[in-house]
Length: 349
Image (cartoon, rainbow, N blue to C red):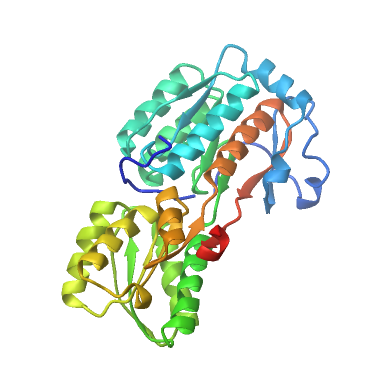
């Protein structure tokens, strides 16, 4: 799904108990390529790693293939119906297969119960590594722990609380929200005279996304104190964003800025603002995910002014490399971070 045909919740939306003995922070630098004698990975706490810590060698790929044997790596995204989640899962699958590792992928279609079923099925089939975007940590905790107890390494992306017996790879939701909020605040100061009526699109059902929305709100309060935030409204999908913004405009017709926890919800807000005949020169929308539709809207000018790149392809490649490292018994950081960046019209010229 490289074309965005259905707008579901995006990214996200990115700590763990581990069975390996923690190493001191100083043990990690320079050891990322080393393989432990016992064949079990050294999962190291104490710092946030980067993609460089997951660079794999041919020796590690060979050891991973040997350790995997006739088994496979399971991938369970949150959904395959957004560009972000499709991109992460597809990138991870492609990279793993390029290393000669078997892969099985199940799309849970944003349903926690389907993730539980996939975890149970993968465990029963003997999956050695499970890469997962956890929809609801509390609901999935038992199934994840059972999979880890049966020997599967868990690689969580878009979150950090559920990587039992493994590692987590995530853009920090606080970083995403702060980047979007700071850019919106900059536009409020530079183009709207420091005054604006702001609506935030949220998705309270997912704790990680609430962190993102909290960071948006805090950045706006700190860097655009003259702006008035009139509420946090349900977003995450185009349908939600449209309905929420229609309702918000009835109560607050002077809304001039919308900051969304993802691009998909922002598309609905854009439609509502256009239907309300808002002046594009005095109306600002900032999203998160850097989806192609958002980039096209930013490039064309108008209300959609910026989006934060969540780098799904890099996240997927990091997950694949993490699987190789774990299978090869290498030293890896428990927690790894994907960087963020704001994309504006200037960046797209």
